[in-house]
Amino acid sequence: MKKVILTVKFHSVFLFLLNEKGQIIMIRQFPLQEEYLPGSIYIGQVTEIAAGIGGAFVAISKESKVFVSLKDNEKPIVLNGGVKESLRIGDQVLVQISTPPLKTKLASSSFLLSRTGTYCICRPGEHGISYSKKLSQEKKDLLKEWIAEGKLSGRKNYGFVIRTNAGELHEAGPLLAEMQEFICFFDAIKEKAPYRTLYSCLYQEDPEMISVLKDLPISSYDEVLTDDERLYQLLSESNVKNVRFYQDDQLSIWALYSLESGLKQATEKKVWLPSGGYLVIEPTEAMLVIDVNTGKGSIQKGTRECGIALKVNLEAAKEIARQLRIRNISGMIMVDFINMKSKEEEQFLMEKLAGYLAEDTVKTRLIDMTPLGIVEITRKKVSKPLDIKS
Image 1 (cartoon, helix red, strand yellow):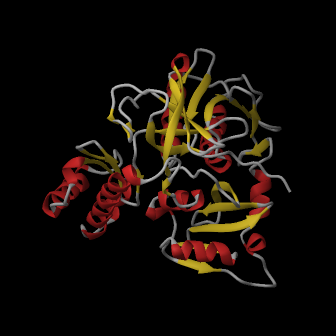
Image 2 (tube, rainbow, N blue to C red; image 1 turned 120 degrees about the horizontal axis):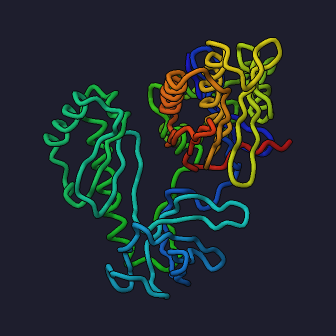
């Protein structure tokens, strides 16, 4: 049975996603107390416009500021002046947190508001409806029919992205209900914002762990398990389905599902492959570097023995995609695979790697293989990587 496990250790909340074989395929780490949650909406005030870096600094409290990139954010909702073509210092604006602060880096925010649900994403100020690329044409046609027949009130003032999860539905009700909920939500935001004071929080998003859980494809797990009473209450209040409380004084949830060893492996430099080869994973300031090695009793790196190099590289490709998810790596990743016999083998490897990366719920791009045989990958930053400190 595929499971999501939520548990507390090292002063953090950990989310583990296990496949049907009990193998950990994703780990996320969250602080016990979260501030400035992604998705939360504030009334802020522009304090500085930094034209040189194409952004603005907006105060959302007397002590805290956020950074807003002005690219694709040209028309903010200004509460003390309506919609303007350009910002001015002193403007009171609606901002939505995009990513939380990290060390000395400010939280990033956007003037373009949105809400993400299980089945759709709603964007006020837009008008069209787009569909996940992972939906088949048959599913898209059915969903279009449902939405057209639904005749949602106020729909023309909002744009929607219909998510992959909508393809799992057997009836229109849940999708239409979520779309209408978001329309009513933003109508209420627009109505009350002009009467609220500066620095007001108009909407507090769910804790990030709940958002990540809701963002997982419905088909990726069968139940949610937790051994923490506070988390169980939070999950229940957040309407998460199939939640079960685990309690056993003789066998902890960490021991039952080997979570401790899973965490340890997720922070080790060397990762072994089935054939005896291994990966060496090295983070640097600018990027993550992964070196694929053949190990003892196999071939030496740089040789072209028929089939063996390809076999190790294929194992490595599958494991690399898994490690990126487990460690929550973001940014640029450079992979040095073993030299292969032919261009055909290189092409086959790249096709397989692209398929493994496509399974990631976080946007991941396979860029290319350089003339030196280095493969470049990028992965979108959505939250902090693992940082295990006992």
